[in-house]
Figure 1 (cartoon, rainbow, N blue to C red):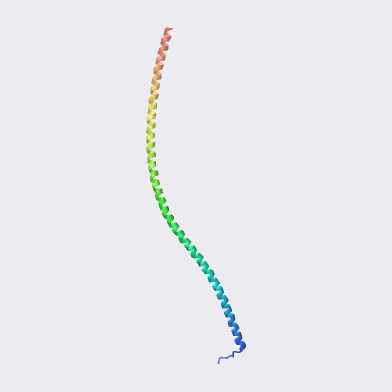
Figure 2 (figure 1 turned 90 degrees about the vertical axis):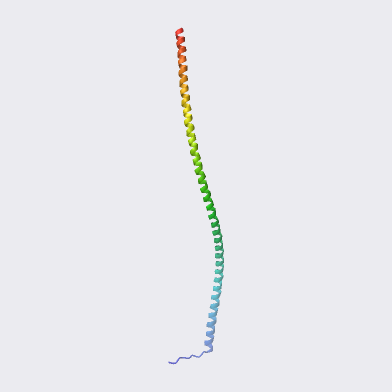
Length: 137
């Protein structure tokens, strides 16, 4: 078989020219659209870079807060030690108050015994006086 050769007529060349021009026009439109999308992407990348910068700043703040948290934990540990000391002192005070209570109870008991003894003495004196008065009448 022999290849078929067609003649390029002016009409066919004009059709080809229009076809190529339409293709380039479409290509230019696609490129404009792609450039617009690239511009939008560059804007979004800028926003993302800004967000990353903010995140890095937050990361530094969190790192600083971690140090502060460690300090607070240390202070809490110190306060726990102080609370332990205060509890020990409270225990000592309770012991002293218990001792004072025992001492006060002992003194009140002694006072009560003395009052009972004096009541008996005065009662005996009163009975003796009344007996004397009763015998003299």
